[in-house]
Length: 257
Ligand SMILES: [Zn+2]
Ligand SMILES: [Zn+2]
Image (cartoon, rainbow, N blue to C red):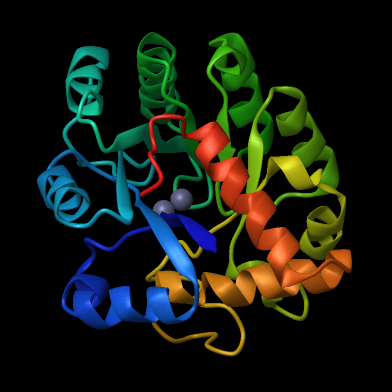
């Protein structure tokens, strides 16, 4: 049994095909998926998905790329996070790839999310791109180690991975680890302790080999897990059991059904 720890089933590419998506999850042994929020406007759609389907969980956050989204304050995040199927705060973090000017509003927004996570005790889903040093600095400054979380769609090197592990964070790998040229990431996939590893699709983006370039979906997380199992020389079963246990340990509010 596998869990896709990060997907966007509310995005139009996926929302239109929900019945087929859920059935491919089942066929591929993907028992659960976490639908991650990127703004507050679309949150009702994510909550509706999580309410309607026992195998789906939700999170609340405003993505660092979402410059024009309504700015969340700690209180509104806390209110929304009180929903029983919301298991995390995020995605949040920093993205200096799309915002090369490294704007202060991103760091301010990130701090609000960390404060909300600490206050409700739900872990953080952290997005970081071209911003690893600042991301780690803010996590430390705001005491994120007290609540923990996951570095999602991890694409950094082992040094950054071990700094995040030291803060008590988990590392989640996406389909990028299946790409032939992702040698640094394959090295990370071999070295992260098995009890701190998660797998994800970040669908509809970043489909793993052999679907690279196509629309991704949670069922494909099986191909991510197969590649990591191969790299670590363990069985798919062992990797699936460990990453699923890790998911439910980290997202304590998530109940297995
Ligand atoms: Zn992200
Ligand atoms: Zn995402």
